[in-house]
Image 1 (cartoon, one colour):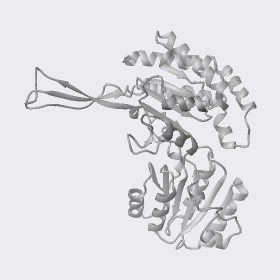
Image 2 (cartoon, helix red, strand yellow):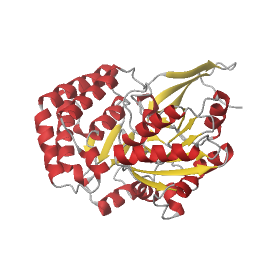
Image 3 (cartoon, one colour):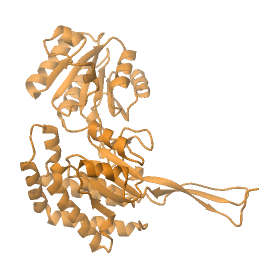
Image 4 (cartoon, one colour):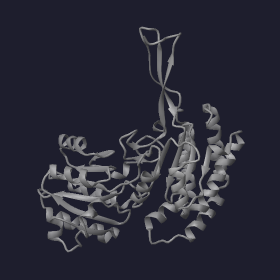
Length: 399
């Protein structure tokens, strides 16, 4: 696609904000059709599906934030002139064509597309069938904004494909795909990785861990655990596993206190292993694989380890590589934890719920990447470009 100047891209985004605001009631009504046909047994997916007036406000705010950010395209990374007179400049460059596959969450149709568009990429969106009515009207808004500014609707396309058609599109796309970003559970991610024939940037899987060290401030530990588990169960940054160090003073009473609070005040289902299984009557883990499971529900595992090293080993073995926390007053031990844990975000004495583009100062995000190439963590505007070398010569040849 053509390289657009910053003003043109921002004009589209300004139009988009106006259009969404004017059509907000239509958007909410379309979403109600999706909600009426959705099975509420999956509360996390249902929560992600909801679009109310506040969610529309959030969409507009996300566009506004991206509009106000610096254009990430064409920025100089490095520049040098060699002794030979050859001038070499490395600049940021669009990926080209990005496909985003996501479950539920119609707001992704806005927040992901606005980032990819500002970074001058052509976008294919593949939302879940459960959000079909919502996504259709949001695509209409995008097309209206593009056409108001003299641009082709082909910049942003919503795909209406079933699973088999999606498989065929991924394996034999009608045009070159440069990057695919699946946002969803492990089944979706595995499906895309097995099927796609271009680069796949993995995002979204949580299964986040928290380790309570022997010197932990117990009030901080309780506050952080409760927030990370209950603030938003549908978020990939929610907490699923807690590891108590067996040397924590008054371990038995603290485990019982936390478990009772989670169960009675927040209706959290509790599974136990290790020391917590010895001192409580809660169900134990059905299988060892439960340690690897992302719950996306009011459900948590309380387990124990005998040392710092065992905690690090457990987390690196079972977590999704998203976020992990240590509760400790020892800053050197916290730094050691952060260096040894293989996650996109590592914390001392803070909730995993901060693993979010807006909360981390990145702004709107396409996803939380758990890959190490090409970026890990919140995938914001600056991360949606690649690079290119510009080389100027004057008849230079290599001899």
